[in-house]
Image 1 (spheres, helix red, strand yellow):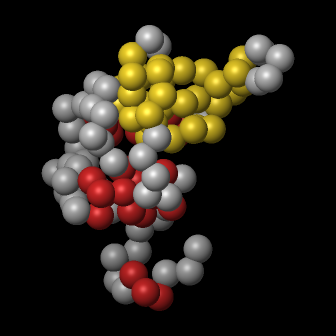
Image 2 (cartoon, rainbow, N blue to C red):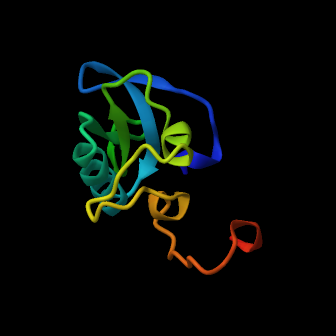
Length: 109
């Protein structure tokens, strides 16, 4: 997932230089991230990944045209908003079930 590494990658997606948000994303995950990021005012670019022999894979590369965007910073500084008005948490970003009663240091994944 994108929140496990703080490295900032840039790639060309659909002919535009983009910050890579996630690679190897399933279609469901790509759709989830696209809806979330468009709701926050970002322009999302997606491209199907290709195997070494050139055949299309079932996974996607997701990028944003905002070169300075870093998902780790945006999520942990609570700068992204969900459609229901709450801030995006790491559990929401990673699509883990949220348990608000458990302190973060007791989470084991």
